Image 1: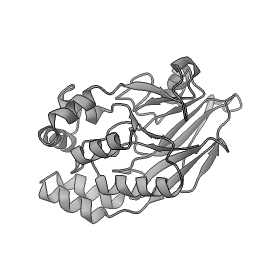
Image 2 (image 1 turned 90 degrees about the vertical axis):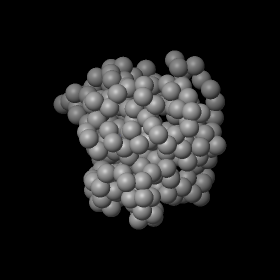
Image 3 (image 1 turned 135 degrees about the vertical axis):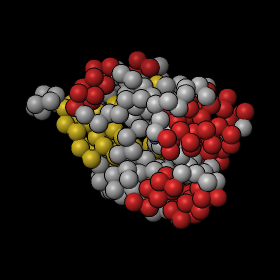
Image 4 (image 1 turned 180 degrees about the vertical axis):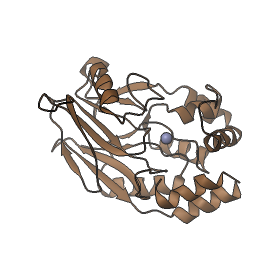
Length: 257
Ligand code: ZN
């Protein structure tokens, strides 16, 4: 089986379609797992929610999903993000909002079946298990705190918009290794060592590469591969201009920052 793992779509439908097309061509159609922030920043929140619902995706909530429905305020957001969150609130339907509000902050998944959390293979969370919708899992300290709370062999996080892998191991001075996943990177998973994977961001990459990012898990080989895909960035930017979304949010898509 092959599972597509996506995160931080951020209402960028052109990027999402590019990723889903690639996943389909790769046969990664046995599951679609999404690590939150489906909306916020981008111009097509309702369309992205519908696309993922139609595809039967398994989602968790991100901070932007909560802000889009008013469940949390925008005080912790920078001014551009806050402006986009309020814009998103006006765009989504009541049904969209109810759907987002019903998303859990943490969930579990196992390819091909519904397993109880204690027997699941993967834990899914937007930020970290210590602080589910807010914490950036980008330091060894945060990674260690997350791993201490991880009860499944593998976990998947988003939020930083940076593709990354953390693997525990006694040989590492920090108790784990942590590295950026390049386009085409392939990581072998081993149930004896807990692993955390961030598939990067579909709709607003921030690692200097503007291409949409996602990961695919192949159960047969036990590997996760990272993919970067070109998409029609100007098309998304034009929609953002028409919606009068903040200039920096439009510009950053082209540079991947
Ligand atoms: Zn995000």
